[in-house]
Amino acid sequence: MKKTPSRRAAPLFEVRHSAIHGYGVFAVRRIRKGTTVVEYLGDRVSHAQADERYKDKSADDNHTFLFTVDARTVIDAGVGGNEARYINHACDPNCESATENRRVFIRAIRTIQPGEELSYDYQIQRDSDDAPDIDEVYACRCGARTCRGSMLEAPKKPRKLVHRAPSRVAASGAARKRVTRRGVAGRTRRRGR
Ligand SMILES: C[S@@+](CC[C@H](N)C(=O)[O-])C[C@H]1O[C@@H](n2cnc3c(N)ncnc32)[C@H](O)[C@@H]1O
Ligand SMILES: [Zn+2]
Image 1 (cartoon, helix red, strand yellow):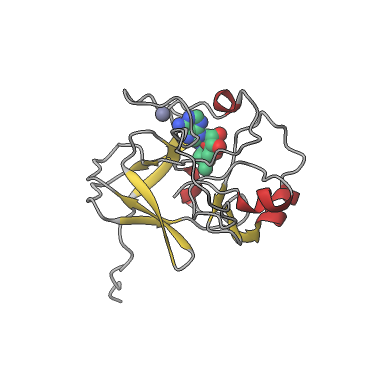
Image 2 (tube, helix red, strand yellow):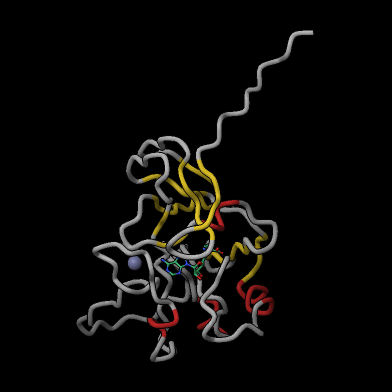
């Protein structure tokens, strides 16, 4: 009997140990700029549910599989997540995260050669009540010449005084700190763009 040829495309990447941290995701084929590499999948929960799940983790544990979609939803890739959860942060990344119709995709922003580690900038949100050592807790080990030393978003430049009510809507995300604060401030916490 004739074998039906498999239509499954050859994988673009594999998961293995990374020099940056733990496991990472590495290209096994050339990935062209603009390619949607993988969707960031996992359990979709509210910010309050994410807080409840990880409330007992220590404040100096920076490990997170959480990704903020918007003010309502966080993807917890620790539950039902796929390989996307192993993509590490880098300050000069070759991918970006993009939120479309409340789904999150990882897309190549330049052509990636086989063997290169995939990365995107987590841009984890800073909050007014962050501990003074927050940048040490979230220290970046990407090794880029332009490494900003932190997985958190770059500190905002002091702004001119503007009379505007603070926004309560979270920007859509990249990586999210492990646990949000309680109350309104908690709901505004997000990671990345
Ligand atoms: C989504 S996981 C990425 C996969 C992770 N390497 C693993 O094995 O589970 C995100 C976590 O990996 C670590 N991580 C990712 N990028 C990093 C970086 N550039 N420097 C230091 N730690 C990093 C942090 O603990 C972060 O919370
Ligand atoms: Zn870095």
